[in-house]
Amino acid sequence: MASGNVEKLELSFSAVPDKPKKDWVLLSLRVLAFLATASATLVMALNKQTKNFVVATIGTTPITVSITAKFHHTPAFIFFVIANGVASLHNLVMIGVDILGPRFDYKGLRFVLIAILDMMNLVLASAGDGAATFMSELGRNGNTHARWDKICDKFESYCNRGGAALIASFIAIILLLITTVMSISKLKPKN
Image (cartoon, rainbow, N blue to C red; front, side, top):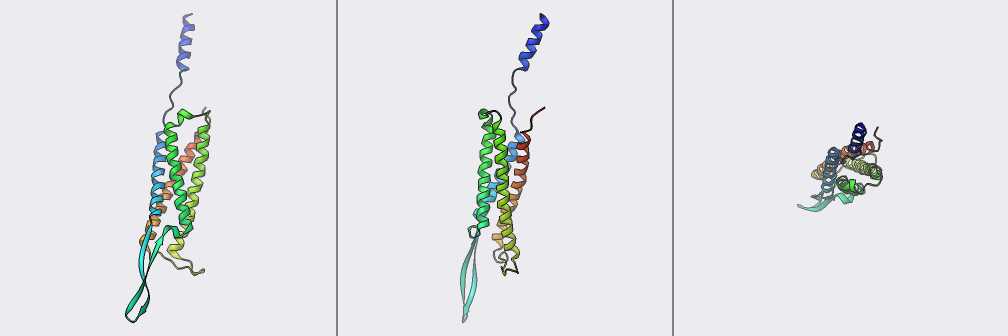
């Protein structure tokens, strides 16, 4: 009889569920990815440079034209800003889901949705980076076969800021890849 009571006590203590622990590594990676995508978005969206060029000379008077290089002159840069803005918003929402999510979990469906959305976010951000990288390379080196001149020799700070936005976005891609792998690994059933 005494041994029966001991077993019941052990069973009642083991039946108490453990509180879910916060995954601080994943949460901190999401915060860093948010900061990287948000900074890439802001740097590219605010990127512009105006320069004056001499187009003609009448007598001794030079005729100048003011030309401004802005990110929205190139559709690839617009896509880059939109893709990184969506990635920033996604990371911000996922930070909230990581903090408040266990309260609203329905049969583990939250982890499946997070993994799918993380993959979609990674693909969108990498597509934006690819498009912007191609146009940046074209602006830096030009294309002699198509007779497209390079512009980075004329708008150097514009190109440098665009390059900084690309570097921040590539760092975000690496962080998004790590968070995607971690969120997919949460789907694996525990032994």
